[in-house]
Length: 226
Image (cartoon, rainbow, N blue to C red):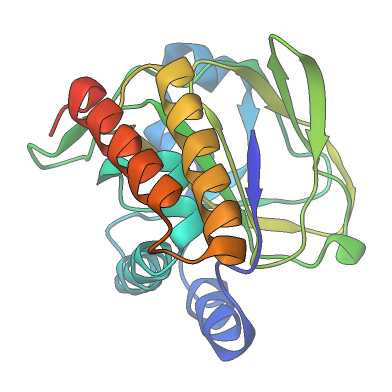
């Protein structure tokens, strides 16, 4: 799991919130598989609405400008962002995301290696609504600031706790990574992070940095599907 702060900020965050706030909301099970439909109670923005498409494109542009997101996800394809809204009593019980996601009415499909939730509501404005993710290291509860994103393996069991006050607005989507294996992707991310830390001290033209960068790209070449 990796939090990525300030994917959306300031006026861009405000614009996305304004776009989706005035749009048409439908039953959240419109895009659910069989298992999720039994566990889910929320609303969702019609994915083909002009507001959803415009807001989704803004988020995709922001992701492309985030070095941390690129380094962690190594994205090959990103599913166009969807938007959900949880009001009082809404929740999403424990489930695992579908392995293959298909955009309705198109031939666009991805393998869901990573799931992402981008929080759009200030956490002080609602109670409950934590995203709870279970992985090999335990259970993690997440409730981030508006504009922050959490990235986690799509194979993880997860749920959203019931809202007891206010509303929780988020964008959510999936990523097919160039590196399919979670462990290999984590190794590359750790190596890249170490290279950037050392380079900040020694400079990009340091011989050790050049060697380590070569190791990174050779591993990426070995593991990547592009």
